[in-house]
Amino acid sequence: MLSFILSIQIIRGSLIIRIPLIVRCADCDKEFAITSIEYKCPVCGGLLWVKIDETKFQEKFKHIQKHNSFWDFYFALPQIKKEFFITLGEGGTPCRESNRIGKNLELKNLFFKDETHNPTNSFKDRAAALLISHARSWDFQKVICASNGNQGASIAAYTSLEGMECINIIPSEIEIGKKAQLIAYNSKIIIEGNIIDDAINSALSPEYIKEYYQCTPEFNPLTIEAQKTIAFEIYKDINVPDWVIVPMGNGGCLVSIWKGFLELKETGVIEKLPKLVGVQSEVCAPIVEEFLHKQSGTFEDTNILQSKARSIMVKNPLYQAAAIRAIKESNGTALAMPENLMLSSIGDLARYEGIFAEPASALTIGALTMLIQHYNMKHDDIVVCLITGSGLKAPYVLEALSTRAKTAGMGGILSTKLKILSQISISNKKGIHGAKLKEIIGSVSLPAIYQHLKELEIKKLIHRKKEGKKVLYFITEDGKKVLDAMDVLITLL
Image (tube, rainbow, N blue to C red; front, side, top):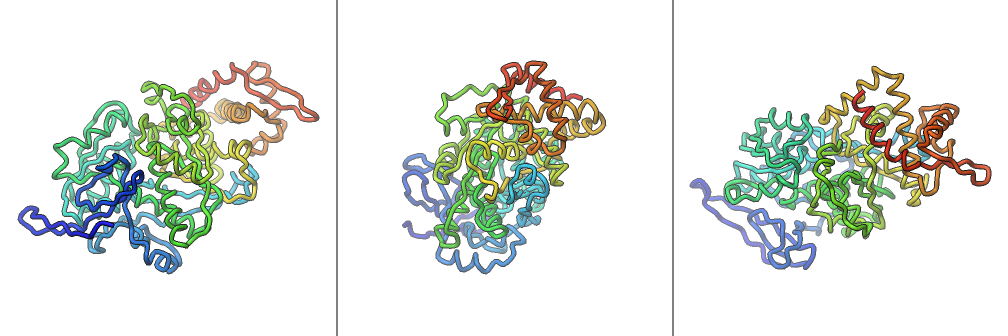
């Protein structure tokens, strides 16, 4: 263990005492005291984790009867004097039991951890509160952040509250709602490249090192510390779930939640751990491919730019190894989902649960059927889907859903066929029967399901096979090709 040494510096003519962060390398386990933001071990290059004081963790955690704020868990966060705490009311988000989707899937204990209730409508407000508080405690007046939008929007909001200078480096293609937040909060915007991988390394430019506090999520280990409080709140609300399903971009959110549950277990608060499921879009799924030991595919920038899940489009995720390690340690899995499930899942969440989610979050709903059918998710398991952000930030989703409401005839028919094709595609190895499709989709009568199946079969998009008394349906190659075309058609109606 390194000794605790204060860093005393002269900044703008004033004596500033920086309380060092004690960090530990996730690979070689060496510990360091740092007074500047570092994310890589100087010995082996592994990722650095912030080390917290666990001596009174259990006692203080049990004293929290009902969590109302992110800062209720200050004792499990890096040491910052309370005088520097900044808040816009982040954290304390609901972990709400499903109203209808759970019943349709025969899941008795399905919950949604709804992070859209945060001040800027995403889970990144937790990180912004901690990072900007820490920046103030170290007497920084300027911050730099590269992101796909959510973290940048959150950082901009919290710096505007404090009158700090904020530079956001973003790729050219991010959701317009997130860009609007950056502008509204008076952040300086620098466009760098087309995708986040182009923009992210710019935040490490030498011109920012001395005067700018690093808020890029990949480069500041405090981001993980802030986001782990999601796990704390889940436990406080519903105890330890059997499954937690998390959308993945750089893998940091999943790693954060795993670190939170691990700290609860290591300090004796809980005895078991949940299975973690990381979900990515098929358009860009490097973590899933590595987890499944697939030959790494080429994720084309053209396809990434057309994706509706732009917030998780990361070709070279920094937390890939850590995320895979967490998934394996939890006995969980990683799934790549087709994007044509997203709009229907977004619609289901809005209509049946009153939650308007961003596309990346909706992938967690689409994963449920696959987990039930192929990964032994039981009907009485406690399942939590993480809803990371609001659909209000993605106007193309608003356009698609509002237009669909106006064109209930053709739009509704195509939407139902898309759902049926998508579910058959997911179940293709084992096949699926009409009654099961009715259970999953819920809002369509069984005769209507079979009418759609008949029409899809006539068009040779699916084929049937009789097994015993059941007729099972399988998607054809033409069906797979038409899925994307149908999705585009719905979006453009």
